[in-house]
Image (cartoon, rainbow, N blue to C red; front, side):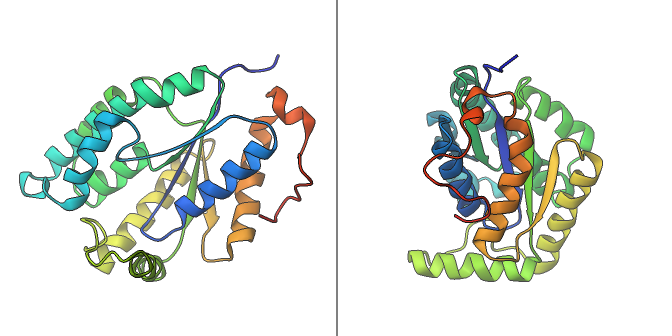
Length: 233
């Protein structure tokens, strides 16, 4: 029986992994297949969550400790879920989100040293019964990812790195391994994709990971529209 609820797909990975680029490629491919697509991000995505975004990324909350940051992320996520993500899924929209619950597990849990029990309670409240159907983890060595992030910032005219980009390479490598550990623990939900390659190759692998989930959706039955070729964006 065709599904009426949309798919919730999240993208995770370290700094400079190319999440926003690959979300854009996937959104384009799904749109060409006739799906309604919503692209969103965390922290942010809803009016309430966007108000918290600057506080978190600027480092203004850092002096209050990792626990306070985790609470702010959870509050922003819950607002995002209730006002944006869940309503879109109920309309049958494909929701693509740049970061979600796994980033909190990694950034506040592993490298922030908050207990898994504390974060688990926060996560249950924050996502409120709306976990991702699929999580794409874009994997890249920390040094390469940070170099990409720096080049991107220079191109955009951004001189000051954000709260997380300022941290040392060892911390970023710890986070990389933490994402891989999550994927190993939850293989049904997570797919790890090598993000060191060219955009088109990565986009093809992302689409290959998503395609099996589209079988129960009517729009997928029409196949690729507009002459789309898999593996080329």
